[in-house]
Amino acid sequence: MMSDTDSRPVGRQGRANSAHVPYYKRDVADRVLDFDEAVLGYDAESAIAEASRCVQCPEPQCCVLNCPANNNIPEAIWLISQGQFIEAAQVFAATNPLSEICGRVCPNLCQQGCVLTQRCGAAAIGKLEAFVSDVARQAGAFKIEVPAEKTGKRVAVVGSGPAGITVTEDLIKLGHTVDVYEAWPEAGGVLIYGIPSFKLEKHVVQNKIGDLEEAGVTFITNTRIGEDITVDDLISEYDAVFLGTGAGVEATMDIPGNDLQGIYTATDFLVRANVPQPMLPADKQTKPVVGKKVAIIGGGDTAVDCARSSIRLDAEEVTIVYRRTEAEMPGNPVERKIAQEEWVNIEYLQAPVEFIGDEHGHLKAMKVVKMALGEPDRSGRRRPVPMEGSEFIMEVDTAVMAVGYWPDPALGEKTPNLATHKWGLLLADETVGATSREGVFAAGDNVHGPDLVITAVASAHKAAASIQNYLTGAMASWPSPN
Ligand SMILES: Cc1cc2nc3c(=O)[nH]c(=O)nc-3n(C[C@H](O)[C@H](O)[C@H](O)COP(=O)(O)OP(=O)(O)OC[C@H]3O[C@@H](n4cnc5c(N)ncnc54)[C@H](O)[C@@H]3O)c2cc1C
Image 1: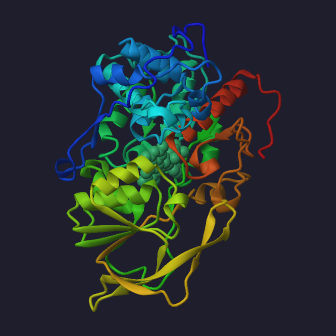
Image 2: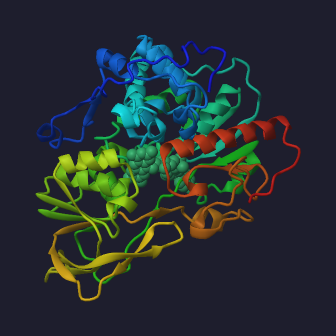
């Protein structure tokens, strides 16, 4: 996508055949000793060298098309190659309020279409984005400009994750007043209470929340909407309500022994392992106790995060047990590779069928069955089928179930006429974010299911644009959610 301000020379051949410039990572032996960020990224010199490889494709560029937020990546990369780091950061930030965060955690869908992939490796767009965002942050260039004159319209945002942050920023820039309600003690959603600090340090998220507070946003934390305050209360107090409540309910495994000591669910494990004590509710302030042999059940980013956390909690042997093969594995392959560098084992085509306890009711082993792949299921991935007689015993003293999430059904149950559908997902028109209640919008994981930071950002931008239409009277009639 080119704008009037684009400065790049389209079709320049760059240094297309030069090798990918690796970014810096901490040594494995050093980084597994703490929860600080493992990837250090680029410095100025290496960032310019990596950015200079971009060939500046003419439109349509695959990187832009692949990015759910349609970041103007070619322009940003061109500016980096010219050493204009702050300007590049502002190009990323124009379409993504979480560029500092996505630069660190995005699986970089943009890079998958890069024409350099076959020749010498895609440009490392995400790590370049993180580098320039950090430069801009240090230079104080991320101040959010809001109109001096307010519109007088007030919006309640429920949930302070990527979707809530995006809607909030978009609306305050238009002069509206936004209050954000959050159930956890701190704002940030999964960015704080999920993604571990070795991928994304908490201060990066807190800086963003600080920008919003400075621009006049009020965060009301420790407040779960649907309990003392209902969605109906918000509808009567505000001009519009946005629900960015994510998909925070954890799936468990319905197999014998799942209540033994030593078995955790993923978020409980990650939050207690990673989040500093003052940011935690009273019932989550103890560290998880990890034995020598840890099994993580599941295969996505969450499973990998639990495995890397276990290594940092001094486990001697950490194994991800996944029921399909690597080809079907969800999540970011780069993060998986980093985990394997940190001595995490992955066992494919296996699933536990029973947790076995010792005489004290503590986990001591799992009965595991081997799998073969059958016909594809509804997700298109081949279904794992247990192989008869293949059971074996795996000794473990800690297990973490990282087997999926869905939205909290309570919000739908407690709000009259707020329609939900499978897995408790809120029914909302994905192009405008309109729910079945007039004036109530929704976007992010609670609408499309557990996904990525950047997809929550992209859908929340659409909802914010619709809220603006609603507040200004430009929405002719309330769309029915599909
Ligand atoms: C462990 C883990 C690791 C991940 N790693 C990555 C990664 O590396 N890269 C990536 O792109 N994505 C990753 N994801 C996915 C990504 O974090 C989510 O897709 C994204 O955060 C969704 O944003 P959201 O705003 O929709 O929801 P959330 O981030 O879940 O935010 C929702 C917020 O709403 C609050 N809330 C819920 N109900 C209420 C209520 N009734 N009242 C008040 N507040 C409420 C919640 O407490 C939460 O803070 C990961 C997810 C997990 C769980």
